[in-house]
Image (cartoon, rainbow, N blue to C red):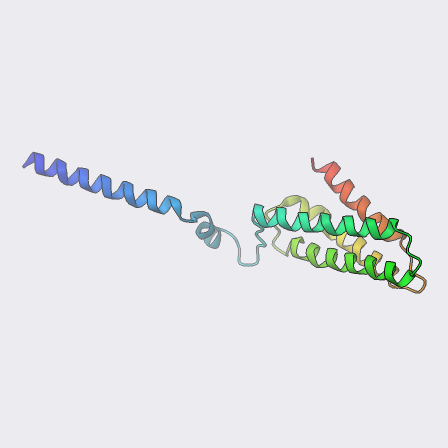
Length: 150
């Protein structure tokens, strides 16, 4: 009888262990976030964050290239600068912290200012004649944030 009880207990322990291992493979963190974070919390996963920051860096390279390249056709240069700034604004708005904050605290401090700089640069670049002074400052905003947060 004792032997049968110990086998039953062993089976229960093995069953619970198997259930825990299987559940450990699932995304428990995502389920926990649904319960523990407020509904308007803007959670950005590490992978998504890196991808968006990489996209932002790529657009910054395109912006720098458009600003450095002297194009005899001013409208082409202006269009390249505006395209890069629009893309940066789109990507940045996806990274910007919502009302309840973000999982990346540095975004709360710096992304709002960066987005303001990008909007001002886009407005100045769309004028006739175009002014690219603020567009050049956008790169400085990235450098300043990354210098402070390293």
